[in-house]
Image (cartoon, rainbow over all chains, first blue to last red; front, side):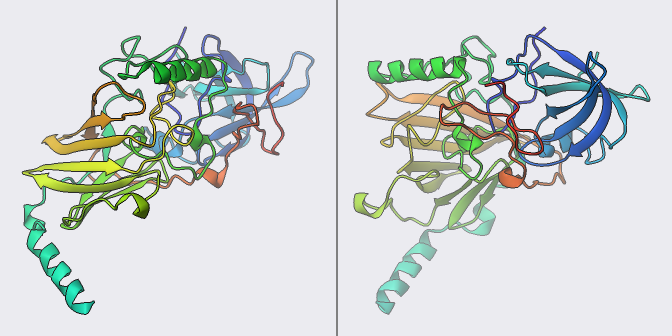
Length: 111
Length: 258
């Protein structure tokens, strides 16, 4: 499925494959509420049982703020499932689509 | 000299509109459309400038149509870097009125300022009766050189001296113009919550005929803050020498499997 996401103001997102999505289950390491993009750092267990850190790129703080996001929308240690468009080349990064928190609440698109 | 300056000032004062003559453009405002510059010709209809294959139909001559085709191919290959990915580079005019963030139109008697949240972009339009500088007194800039006048509640702006191909783009489909572009912009508050900018673009180098484009902006909720966009704060997407936009981890290591 192809989603149309809020457009980044800063760079083209051709490194991400919008025809695929990946669900990352893990814990928040850091939430960077910064320009030009927010970043969600998440620790995920790989198939060998080792922890890997993924970088999830999100939108611009200004427009996220207007849609209800805040600097504490994610906090370190929080358990979360993040859905994103993966990098085409297999790098450990993704473009944010949505997230589901432990209490069942969601951010972005997480049907 | 002093007498001359006083005479100029008196002339300017006689021409300026009063504060009460100016329209209420209090915003901020935001584009109603996505960042495809020419919504009237976008193919496919409703297409996104971030989706390879999307194009518009400026009235390009053959040479610049071929240039646009090359740019679109680079977009497809992920090697058409957006100039503003290098933080600090302004989007420039016309693109600064084709950005997704908040926009303010500030009307004063002697100038109108356009301020964009996605920046840095500031456009100053002189409405004090001055003319454009002659050729040797200006050079290509991101915002260009703009003079304007009021026709009722419509601001009519003429902009020249713009940076072009190689420095600025109009959108990420790969549209570019030359430094010879001249733009007439008619800005008005179309209704309570809608601003409109109608662009008439001449470019004797790139275009066969005039190019007409309209962009509308809706007013954001009263009380909306215009927020800071400090692009260099945490830019994890540098552009490499091949034009590829990279992705870095928190330590600055490249995540792309190059």
